[in-house]
Length: 88
Image 1 (spheres, rainbow, N blue to C red):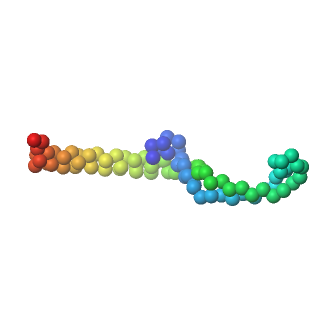
Image 2 (cartoon, one colour):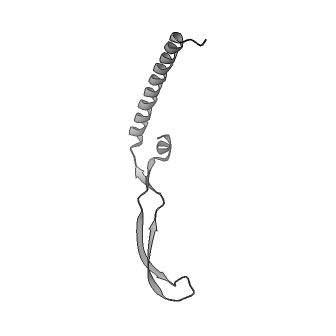
Image 3 (tube, helix red, strand yellow):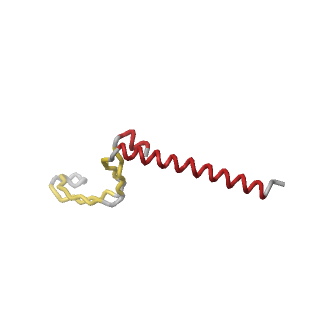
């Protein structure tokens, strides 16, 4: 999320295979000619996606606040556990 805010846009990663059709020259075997080429790209592709930077900043601050609250609650539970079950 912070990277998106710094860049000003998000990156969508598509993992769907994409087939392409084109015209190729030669056959790769030393022959000359024109043929149809069909290929498949199975690799991930990245595509920029527009975001509302101010909304993303608000969301990040909200998440940071939730994280701080949960860390306090976690520490409280750990402390209670240690009181109930002290190390022997």
